[in-house]
Length: 412
Image (tube, one colour):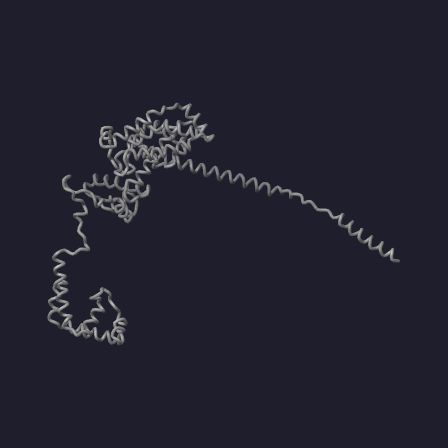
């Protein structure tokens, strides 16, 4: 009997193991897409492509519209300036092919592209003779002599250097930058005199920063010359520096352009009307609110140094010597103040000590601090109402005093 029982147990365990072995993992097959779903996905991709195309078309239409406006402006005057192109297309250095097309349109329309200096509305133009004046001449000549030692490179060499730069060759970067340092000087000379804070060497340094950016971003596969591409980076760097550092208080670039338009409109209206134009007339001409004209007028004011010399060279007077100090009284005011304080002291001496001290605490005649009724009451050990009554009684007494009528002349 015992043996049969053991056999039954063994059979149960075998059945259990067989059940375990018979378990299989079901593999899930990927669900097949229905025709409607596949069509919707395909249509979604097509709509995305259409959206991308429509965005590109809109961008192209916008560029064409802006360039047509610039061409129309050039036809009226017969020329267009580099600064106007840079202001209209601030990121044009990233699209040199579009710039080449724009140049072709200018050539077809008979529009000359000239140097301009209207970004900061400064008309000062210095020639080489002016550059030779001053102590900076020696340092400029030394710099020109130094950069004159670097050889120029041809268009084919530019491509070779650009390929080396793509591979991370630092020496190629230096060679391409050094070969175009003369270009920076030629551009920087055209901006001399537009800011008292930036000398020619400062402008050259700012232009060199733009040149280094052009070296890093130059794409030789586009087919244009490096000098054409670098010119816009150099100009942008110099004009931004003039906008940022030409004033003691920095003005954003967009406000500099607005101020320039305001000054041009003001000058044109002054010539047409023969008088100073009103703010409303300038606002109507520019198409902006009158309040913004007042803001522009306040911002466009030039700052003047207090240490600015006044008079002849022998006279060492500065502007601060002629500005009155409002905190210091004039001699006549100081004498009147002393007489007034003496007479007030005589009137207060006729009061009893308690009344006098109450007035001194209430009006700060001793320490300049005006105490409250509660604080004065604490000092004398009475309520604030009692202090108010005493103060009113003293006021009535002083109104009837004969010397008070004389003091009124000092306040007229």
